[in-house]
Image 1 (spheres, rainbow, N blue to C red):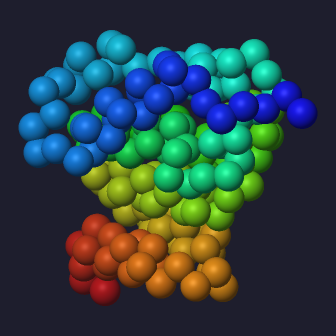
Image 2 (cartoon, rainbow, N blue to C red):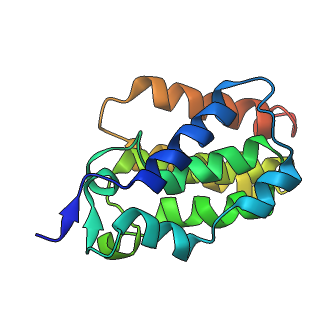
Amino acid sequence: MGAHLGTAEQFGWFLKLNWIMASRESGVTAREFSDALPRFEEVVQMVNAGLSHSYFGLLSSNFNLVALIGEACEKLGLHEQALTFAAEAATNEDLNAGGTFLPTVKWRGYRTRGRCLSAMGKTVEAEAAFELALSNIEGFGFFFLETLCVWDLKVLVLDKSGR
């Protein structure tokens, strides 16, 4: 079938990224993180390990390395880099090239995009990204995810424009 569970390098990055996301003080500066950050193509090679795809990319939103890198970049203020990974998480459906069809991964990508665009002062684009995030999980019953996204939309876009 040409797929596997994951690679040691993938799990190493996964643990490091979750540390950044979970800790108040990650012990790494934005510059250090940016310098160590793999390009998207390198992430695909790492995750696929020479096979056609990885089961984690197909079956789990929580183990999607591309979405997690975008979120970690956003947390560290690396908005331009976050947008690159968020776009891949949100729109890439090529399973052999790091993509997925999971609505929750697409939601994560669009939500990260909205948060970054808002931080960059691009509120119109941010609003559109939050709306796309919501549309990707509509009808699945992911009420908590909807609440998080609506909260971001309210606080980061609507409140700032007086709506």
